[in-house]
Image (cartoon, rainbow, N blue to C red; front, side):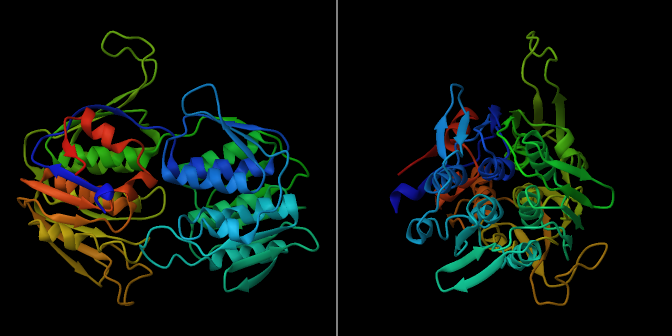
Amino acid sequence: MTEDVLIVHGGTPLQGQIRVRGAKNLVSKAMVAALLGESPSRLYDVPRIRDVEVVRGLLGLHGVKVSDGAEDGELVMDPTNVESASTDEINVHAGSSRIPILLCGPLLHRLGHAFIPDLGGCHIGPRPIDFHMKALREFGAVVDKTPEGMHLSAPNGLHGAKLELPYPSVGATEQVLLTAVRAEGVTELRNAAIEPEIIDLICVLQKMGAIITVHTDRVIEIQGVPKLYGYEHKPIPDRIEAASWAAAALATRGEIEVLGARQTDMMTFLNVYRNIGGELKITDDRVARDGVTGAEGGIKFWHPGTELKAVALETDVHPGFMTDWQQPLVVALTQARGISIMHETVYEQRLGYTEALNSMGATIQVYRDCLGGTPCRFGRRNFMHSAVIAGPSKLHAADLVIPDLRAGFAHLIAALAAEGTSRVYGVNLIKRGYEDFEQKLAALGAHVERP
């Protein structure tokens, strides 16, 4: 389809300034949290991305009035009249996002029942929802599986529970938080995810009246409360988008200042960036920049003009190297001298995008073995989850088909770095998580166009 194709004339260094807004992985969850309140919530700095549209639609189906606020990027959500939605209406969203699973707890509290359609999202591994269903059953939910989805009820209400996740899943931790805050009694969650977006969601819930303690060793304790109220919140910036633009600066030998990017959430990435040979400068808010006091801070990333260095990396849960950082960075690593290794330990099928990079001239070999310091849960299970990247490689243009959100941005970076004109198909998938990316590319001097 011509409307889903981007023509990329590569070989031009990206240079300039762009801004990132609230994190995709927090904003959508904070919108779900608004369901739990008994008064309106106000969320600021919300990016214009597809996932926000999906959650906005789901909230609207359940009687939450969602409107734009006075400021650009401000959303107001009024949950006063929460109501049931028909399965047919909800099924319209089936396959478009994995967010619906997180509505379970809030809807059980507000309505006593919930329906969850078949779940979509990026195809980077099965990502089973067993963790979610097991946790909800521990709270007292009854789950009935049907061909069209899952019907949940709570005939005796929801009660606190002692839970331990087999893996510190972000989604399952969010599920427990959104369910436990209004469950009767105390919930203890062990082996919880502690990503910055999780901590920010806890901040949102605390503003609403929740009582949540984050202990050491991945233990979170939640004291249930009978009522929650609306919140006002500015989310943390999107560290995935910021890192994606940083990788684009390296791959294209350019210089990009990412306003809004925050050092605290990106320290692991910034260390790796420097180890590769990339240069960066951090500017805090309210620090004079270009003679302006009070300007928004950010991070400037640039290629130093010298050779980049190969590195060995393993993705991991926070505070490790984030899985969503690896695809864009691998494109940059194709330009580094030597042998780089990327061991993916979070999602078992996240290296398929490397085939397209090889078709452009990269030299990447994927392996079933754990090519890292320690074996991971995918070892000996026939998953291609380690990659060896030999460089530097001269990339040339190709026709590319985007398989998922993060790999899609990696393909886009490769097309921008390559010599010649590439056609990138399925590019609208990038809108799921990257706001106004075509306008940002134009601001950075990229030569891209729609057919």
